[in-house]
Image (cartoon, rainbow over all chains, first blue to last red; front, side):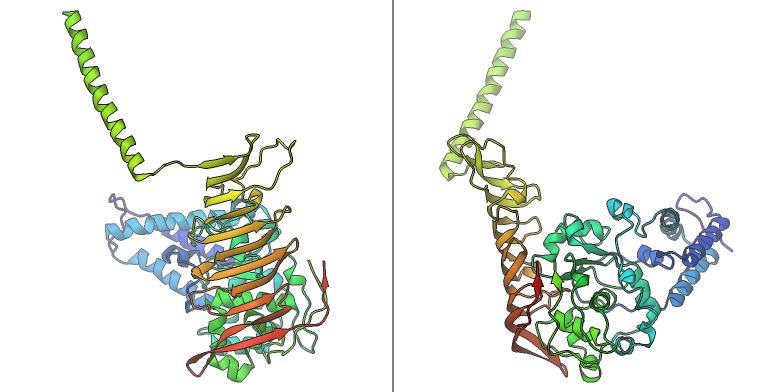
Amino acid sequence: MVVPQTASGAPIDADLVHSIYAWEVIAYALPVPWAGADWFGMIDTPGGASGAAQHPQPMFLGQRRGQRRQAIMRNRTQNVSPMDAASSVPAFAMFTSLAAEAVFSPWPWPNGDAETQKRTDLPTLRGLLADHWPKFPSSNCKRAFSYAIPNFSVETFKNKAIRTPVYDVSIYGNRTLVDVTGGQVQDSRTLAQFLGTVANASTANWGYDKRSVVVVKHGIFSLPSLQCTGCLSRRVALALHELLHVYWGVSDDAIFGTDVLASSYGLQRVHSGTQDITWWISTDCRYTPQTVPSSGAVE
Amino acid sequence: MKRAYLILAAIAAGFLSGILGAQLVHRLEQGAQTGAIRARRFELTDERGRTIAVWGTDSQGSAVLAFSKPRGKDDQAAVDLDDPRNQRASMGVRPWGSPWIGFMGSDAQPRLEISLRQYEKPLLVLGDQSGGRVSLGIDEGDAPGPATDDWSLTFHPEYRAAIGMVKLHGKGQKRLTGFWSINNEPMKFH
């Protein structure tokens, strides 16, 4: 067996590889939001620009874990050229750093947003959906998403919600997109400029493996809900809608263009786009309401 | 010997000065010929010497022509026109390349803004102290993308009324269709 070497020719300690593997197992097993987060995928995956519709192929968490384990085992046992070793050592070092930071940081995104890291009240989509998760696996929306989205799974959907923060523009309006996406979106616009003056919510950096963000107008989650039997609250519907974008990586237009949602699940374009998707989700993805509620207060 | 060195040094210095002077005069003449004045910033002042407009780069990195709010005779406080909140009227280009024209209220809330949004599609927004009230142009929704192609005249908040056109999909085809919607149920607003 050839011992893996670094670029300088020094052998890589097999125990180091074992300890890195142990770190990975610990990181995945931790009952915290970043447990199971895809740092491993992020190390391998270059960042991308926001906005372009993509079709990610989310894998089951088990699949991802398995692949990473196999990759690490390959590094242990296969012949490794100095060049390979040189590229894997920084990756391992980066992983170790991320894992350590994840353990000691209240925020799952190292190097992201120092000010935000200190704020424990920054909600995620998962937080907004907390009371809905137990019902989601048996919901009609889950069935609709399963038909529409390639490789959809509740586990990966939930995992994306855990990792997607929601920025209230009245608090974080001066932060920039480049800042909140950890540099994955090279866009110097502030969140206030990104949202604009008339939109209620906007999403950036879509895709399962990306550091997506949701930017919302203040008070948007307390807007009136659809009043019908089995209907979801506005908060849940809006959060699921935004999660759909960041998970699936497609625009409203592409969601409307998914035939199965129109033909089997009642998604229709009645009003001006995005609202219809939220109201459709409100009905547990059964039909698109022709009229929408208007009582309640807007701040 | 020492005197000879001094004389030589003086000659050399005079020679170099002559070259530099000639170059300077040449450049000034060139500038005068083309009519170009180069500067990083221009400021317009009133009769009391207070800055009332600037043409330069603001704190967000936008290249901007900005005007301050009207000021009383005794108002000597400096107004920082590098801060976009103090720009009562402005036009320019954002650092990411988006041009805009804006009018701001005295409460620093935008009253009118015309801009190119993401993917270079235009939007006009009219508003008041509570935010945007009327928009005309691209409707980006919550997931703006290059394929976004919905256009509308919309009254806010919460889409009180709208008229416009959207793309419809179905069976592999894309079609444009018009729509209008009115929500005439009273809505609490504050």
